[in-house]
Amino acid sequence: MSGRIAPPSDEALTALKWAAGAGGWSEDRAEIAPHLVEWRGRWHGRTPLLLKPADTDSVSAIMKTATRHRVAIVPQGGNTGLVGGGVPDESGAEVLLSLKRMRRIRRLDVADRLIIAEAGATLAEVDEAAAEAGLRFPLEISSGGTASIGGAVATNAGGVHVMRFGSMRALVLGLEMVLADGTVVDELRRVRKDNAGLSLTPLIVGSEGTLAIVTAASLALAPRPATCATAWCALARIEDAIALLRRLETAFGMALEAVELVPEFGLKLVCRHIPGTRAPFAQPYPWHLLAEATSPHETASLSVEMEAALALAMEEGLVKDAVIAKNGREREDLWRLRHAMSEAQKKEGPSIKHDIAVPLVELPAFLKAAEEAVKRRLPGARPCPFGHLGDGNLHFNISAPAGADESAGRDFLARWEEVQRIVHDIVATHGGSFAAEHGIGRLKRGELARLANPGRLAAMRAMKRALDPLGILNPGVML
Ligand SMILES: Cc1cc2nc3c(=O)[nH]c(=O)nc-3n(C[C@H](O)[C@H](O)[C@H](O)COP(=O)(O)OP(=O)(O)OC[C@H]3O[C@@H](n4cnc5c(N)ncnc54)[C@H](O)[C@@H]3O)c2cc1C
Image 1: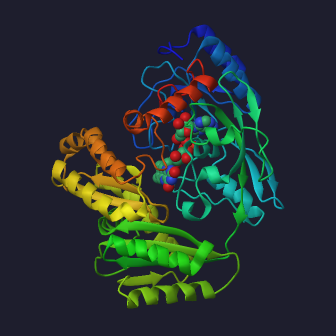
Image 2: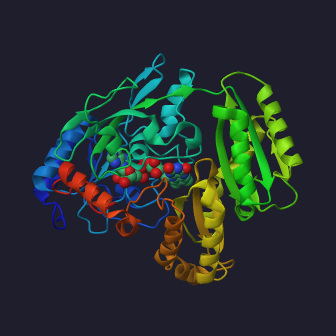
Image 3: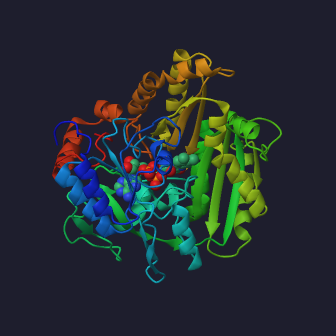
């Protein structure tokens, strides 16, 4: 794994096209263009060739050819990743491998509650297939209509139900993958237990396309809920949000699926920029919490229990005000306020983003220290920490000062790395993670080298050398 990889020769490109088969490649600039821009527009890449194989054998043939000619390969799914890991770099030397044509559902077993889906299937498609059997794929992220199974595996995606179902790693029973040299490894398990030697699957989950190409996944499904109790609560202090989370966990046990945090500033942005939204309460409150419990049965008692839990919390002053959705429409309206956070921030102007997790016991102190440090360094900057309180993962985003024009916005974004270092150092002080659910990609490669334990980094490099000795899989990402 030494030296920069040279642009592919004409001979290598011809061999790759041959390996991808008829309809398995494109040089059409218009077709390739959307694959070269990252979702936030922060990374723009170049590639001489887009490969789009239709099956695992073609991916294997491509990787054998890439190894023979030492060609860099960047795997891509839905291209919704937020750390620049799925787009080639600007050198024009990296070949893009899209898994989008591989989207078959190979198997659905109701008795075993599992589904085997190809890497290019979207999270929504997998959930739809499960729904036909009365089941559900419980990994829910706002980008699920576009994000792929392969991408979710490669990033170990999280989302709003991690507190109940875990991240992608907890849902993957096994993978089919193609190694850098073209070897196909089939670990598509249909059983929950398999201690027959070392497994590659847990290592590949979260490897961001740097160790293997995921071609299919065997995934655990869950029963589909018949009833939801969804509440929006107003709170005065972050400590109260944490106390309420624990209170609801005690009340609902495993039925509590999501507890999401929104600050007043974030709610204001949503109501300002997203048509058809409105705040649940007439007066402002510092914090808001969206909580949802579900049941596989048709029952009215869930909402009654939610009402009772919140009434008690209000009596004690923990909750200042609360609403409970009375029907599906009201539930959607409440979730929209949460799901539209990213879109609303984008419309408000530039923002510097962090994807952090800290132990909940540290969260109030972390927020205080991080907000003070950011405001000291960037006067007028507007922190907007929101996200998955249930598992301690917040998107500590910072909007540019109000009214910043284009040039002020550019200056603000130029401070990204400086601010990121400050925030990540505070995260480290509080025992947290600077990359909770989006991964490292190109965005946090420097931070990984700076902050990861040296022993762990050495072990990661050793694994990379063992599985990808020529360094052809996603070379600019993670390490
Ligand atoms: C509006 C919005 C909301 C989001 N919310 C969440 C959220 O709540 N939780 C969360 O975790 N993420 C979230 N994300 C981020 C993103 O959707 C996830 O990281 C998702 O898993 C990426 O899937 P993808 O198919 O788009 O992958 P891509 O963006 O195409 O790729 C991501 C990474 O995976 C690699 N990769 C892709 N496919 C394969 C494969 N088959 N084999 C090997 N490597 C592969 C790529 O090389 C890249 O490094 C959000 C994104 C957006 C735009």
